[in-house]
Length: 314
Image (cartoon, rainbow, N blue to C red; front, side):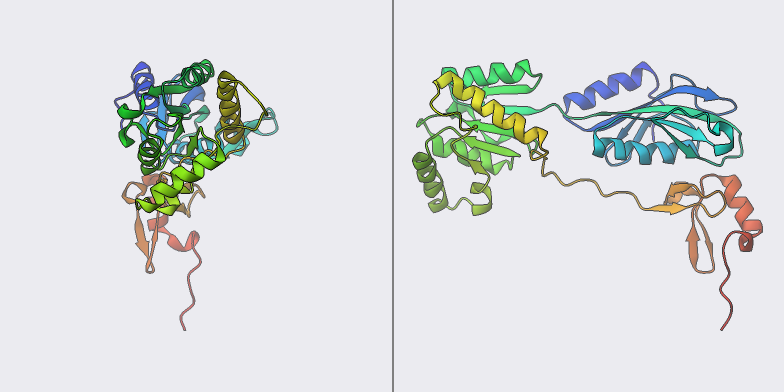
């Protein structure tokens, strides 16, 4: 956790993560009730692995915001949270706002807006035909990050696992371009070629030892079947296919996701916390318990039987 990045510094860091193509959530305190340590306008970035940069609140609020932010990244949908005790809000909570009870020594409360910031679609087009240029222009009009490479200039280094690659070299080094593309394991590889030509390209690459699981990624002919079309309309057909696949959830990067942190329930207040050194661990009866704050741990230490059921001796 980094407390140094607050306000505009957090937004600058968010812009940098977005440029790097990383998924994260931006959490902002939009309302507070003292004596909560969170301040109105405080911001924090939460990565998909659960790292928090910035400041959103104290020991009770932070694990809740991290947990909810990870879910926001997964769902791709923002959410508004009220953090406090249920008695503080009662039936006055508007529809669409989630109440997450937290039990801290303070009687403060927070309203936190969490929004996902997901990577911009990345399209790599290989070729120099008018169709290739048109496809790049159309994708940029959608706000996608789009790059155009001539065949000899294209290498695997231009591809990541979230990229969509369209090989439109049209007979000028198709095999080399496809081999470079599939080696990067992008989420989509399309070859602009007839079915007969596509089968020939893949057959040649299979003989060269390109793994079958890589070649299975290649779609050909690339694009939706719109019937007889002009070369420029092929660009529309390809983009339409990409939009359709993306909207249907088929274009999900294959990068290994960070494992979710192990969670535990604070036996004193019932909060869910991340089980680790920062959660004030305490061993009792061969079981390690975790707490949202030192206050809860001290209560447990003084009278553990009030919070856990002791096993009867044999």
